[in-house]
Length: 387
Picture 1 (cartoon, rainbow, N blue to C red):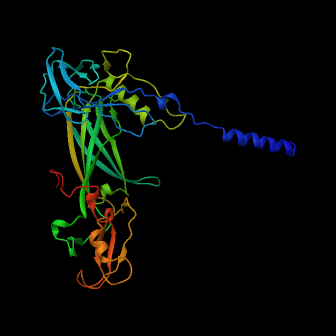
Picture 2: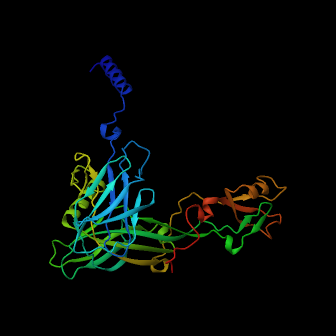
Picture 3: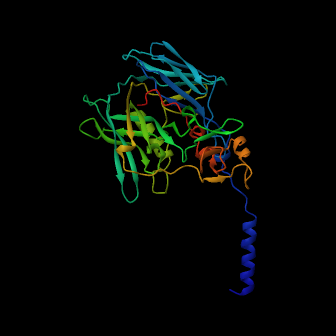
């Protein structure tokens, strides 16, 4: 190819690149929103919570779109109604329903826009107890940390299909200990009630966790993985607790959750399972063509909590979530930042002092608040069950 042809080709390529327009496929820009129903009907003495939300499109900056002001009711096959109350935005709860296990039940929903939804009648399933929740220390070339697992079985061989979720809480500490605090006019030593070094926080599971013994001769689930905690996580730097909940599923519910798991978690390459659709058991009765996302089961819930303390684990070092460096602040009269700035600036915390009492002419060491105040992302009050 001649030099002139190269130049023409480059000009054409450059022109093509400069004229590109962003393409937003309809799936990203569509304003269509569908109802999402999460939760299970608990027929026993424990509470039932149903969460309602609407889907958001992929281009939206909003990740959660709860549905408030709906009317949510559990209805039996004898048309007996059990209303749920909205206890927080999008969450509808009832105390123990104590339902008759010989009947079937469904969920009825009426949203503020007048649409009505109803789930299929479902039998009451009795979930077997959780045998144990345990953990293994994992140390390999690709993974180091704690694998939490669950064991369960059904001696009657009747359950076969299981789902789990969990809540986890942990105690963590700040990168530095703040020994001093401003009283508005001076820097004074903190009293015991003013220390903000150790706090508690928590989280809830977001993955779909399933187990099946359908292909086994006995209904036994052994060391089914629940969650993996990396060795660098703050969750296990002091003390960690996990409360695991177990639900029995029908084969249809298990198929629905399996499909949801594949579509939301397991798609990464062309060799993975491709997106597919397994309908839930909830339908819009005012518009049969409108899709609804969710599956409402009726089952008792089994729970078990464990604690994991730091002395049960190797001496791993957790990564702190903020960049923290101590700096020096000179006392009044010295060059640099004044002590008055430390007294009035609530974004910096005095960590320690070089020599003598706090007001002696010695430099203070200070850090930004997130590095010395755990209440930025936690609470000083331990959970009521903490031990």
